[in-house]
Length: 89
Image (cartoon, rainbow, N blue to C red; front, side, top):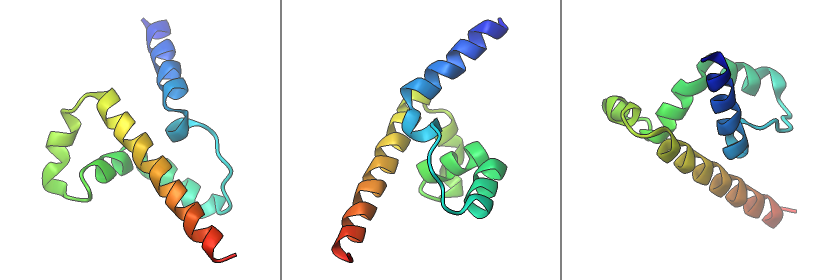
C-alpha cells in the first residue's frame, strides 16, 4: 500500500513539475518558510481566489482539475512577470 502512495506522489510531482519541481529562489528565508508553513492551504486559497466561503467547494473538486488550474495560473503569472520585466530593461 505504501508503494502505491509513493508512486502516486511521484506521478503527481512528474505531471505537475511546475508546481512541485525545484526552482531557483532568491529569497529563501521568506518565500520558502511561507510555502513550507502553509503548503496546500496556499493552493486552496489561490483556487478560491481568497474567498473562504468557497474553501469547502474547492476541496471537493478533483485533484487533477485543481492542479491543472494551478499550473496554468502559475505559468501565466510567470509569463506576465517576464513581459513586464523585459519592458523595464
